[in-house]
Length: 243
Image 1 (tube, rainbow, N blue to C red):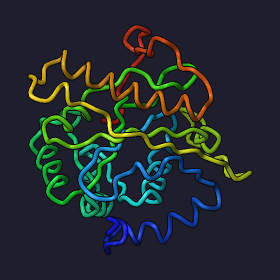
Image 2: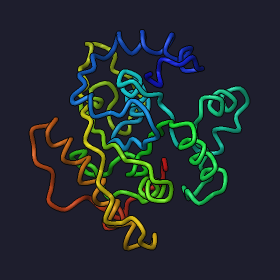
Image 3: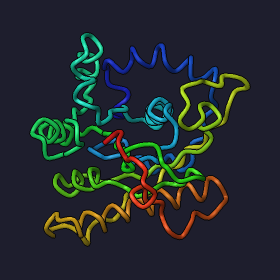
Image 4: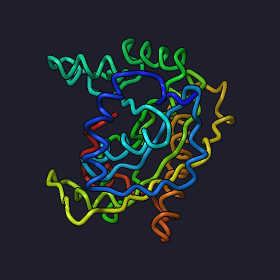
């Protein structure tokens, strides 16, 4: 049985959100059969627009899974909104983004026990790459995957920038936009299993995830990404943002 078919608070979200998104966006889902319909999984999309969570959340629903995110703990403390987010299974992350916080790790363990999915942006914030290719990733997703033995499912999307440009908060509603979403095979992290989760291991594992996401985006764009991935630290750019 699809996770989406079970009664949940997401049905209420879908009742209001899906018709609105349908007016603005036509989704083209590529290789949707690669999205596992059961079991815990970490979904790792590319990130280049402020509306990405809405787009990816909607696409995840259409792919048969429920969209849960790593969310800043401060957001979950907001009255009413925080309660809704907690009830829908969002995972709180304290400022600094460490998955070692007890709250995040316990929530992640519950995710495994209940066979849920969680969406993690491995770049941590909107890409700073001038051409919107994925930039250097952070280790949160692979740390969770290796600590809890959860598969990572890479996802790429393209066309979202027509709905909302990078760094903008303005919606471009008309004309209706087409957004392509491509699902990849689970990232093979077997070579890292059993190794100490030090900086060397986590960096190498994260690079594999970013390579997989970039390859999917290359397919969608019909272009080749730069040989060297953008590193904000080398360009005096901030990486603050999502987990």
